[in-house]
Image 1 (tube, one colour):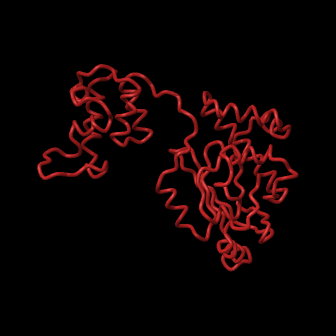
Image 2 (cartoon, rainbow, N blue to C red):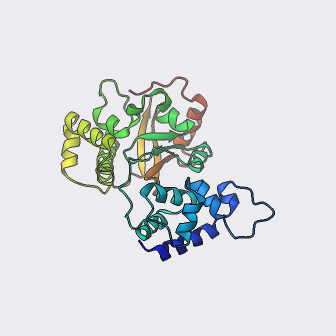
Length: 283
């Protein structure tokens, strides 16, 4: 544990944060830049005395829980959080399971894309957020139990006799390969997560195609820039497909858009009016 470096790092980051950054009033008698020590301690759920000793290079080695609280209170980036752990001695612990919490700014983004079908995928391809047009185009995810919102499971295990044909056959194969590769990479990042392990075991037991792809050990997914989707009301529609990575959350935003002036744009406009009121929910 490097007490002097840890003390300097904590003090520096504390002075960089304004009260407004963490929802605290500025007050008329604030003499120090940034937050007060007692404010950091309160945000980190530790005592002011303990935090003061850390900043004075006199404190004991903080636990993982204390370091997590400090990282949250000081709004540290991933790189800064790792640096904090290394200064304090114990390295960062292994990541937990894939995050299913979507930032409010991303949810706002989905709502601000009325002409695009947009959704958010977790590291395991579970649909964890979507806008109205995505629900109308791909299926009303709110009507599905959570395990049926996982697109890898739907790609390999959904009963073909009951599943609505979502993609053209070639697009479906491309998606299946990409989904298997994304799941393999996620399994490596979350080796101790029971949900990830259970999903992989379920797919290996239930799909020979998935087992073959899994045995290939591929992790790089080629982007699919256009997809042809089939809808029970508007028929086949070819759309641009763009994927934006949210690296700090290990999530992806998938956005389907139509070429301006195309028949697909008119189809999406019609679908936005129809909504999900007559949709056949895929199972």
